[in-house]
Amino acid sequence: MVDAHSPAPVLVLLRDDYRVADNPALHAACATGQPVLCAYVQDAALQDASGTRIADWAQAACAQLATSLHEQGQTLFMLSGPTRLSVPALAQAVHATDVFWNRRYDAPGIAADTDVHASLKKQGVTVHSCTGRLLFEPWAIRTQAGQPYRVFTAWWRAARNLPEPPPPLPAPDIRGKNYAPACTVLAHSPLLCLPAGQVEKKPPTPTCTGL
Image: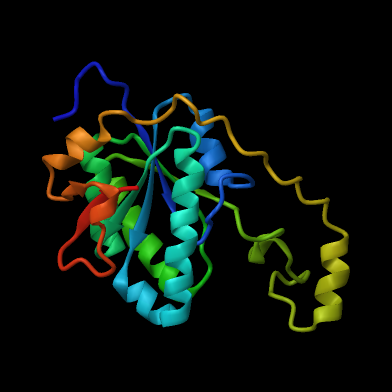
């Protein structure tokens, strides 16, 4: 059970962005002044769609991300299971008020995020979808008729007329923002928070592992 005197945390969902610097979602979460809980979802369905080699690379990149966060006093929690179930369950378990993530653009990722967004909204959790992978959003550059460009040269001329994209964000100051009660809370929840060394590549049931 969450201590009534503990400030409610915000949740940062890290997916294809294995970095601390230039991470708009992490930066925005830290700017709230609330405790921050970072999580990564090992969703077998999405990983299988990416292929084995990409999944193996992602696992190594995630381990490096966990190290980078640990060096600044943060814990990366690993969720295993369908994203649409794991993320709302985590948010509910820790009474998160907000969830931050960097937007995805592939069809499976969009579908998963849409489902999660709907579930979190029903729980009263505010979702913040940030731009963290592209210089310009796909819908920012359109023809005068409001349609996507079909010829690169025309698209490029339009893109060059847009304002310069903002510079990369520095790594946020996340020291002291770790949500300390997380492991205690999750140890008594269906997410089954475990020590980092006990994480399995393909857990049989949804789990939450602190890295």
